[in-house]
Image (tube, rainbow, N blue to C red; front, side, top):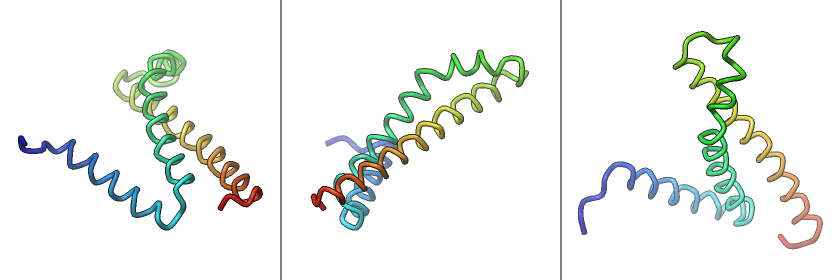
Length: 98
């Protein structure tokens, strides 16, 4: 096997940490958290050009505009995902599946 590069170690660390946390928090909630983080990155990566266009009149520097657009989309998606995750956890608890 070839040597692992740094991104491999980052991914292995994230999965390992997530596994340890899931033992404490519960599988469904932790699996949903991973999906939300990946989804937030995909949404921010996909739609940041549209958000940059909306911020064009507000932020003049293109690099700052790119970072702010990405951050807004990423954090907003994490917030919505956290609300969905909380609702899902309450639903699971109410139905007696936990």
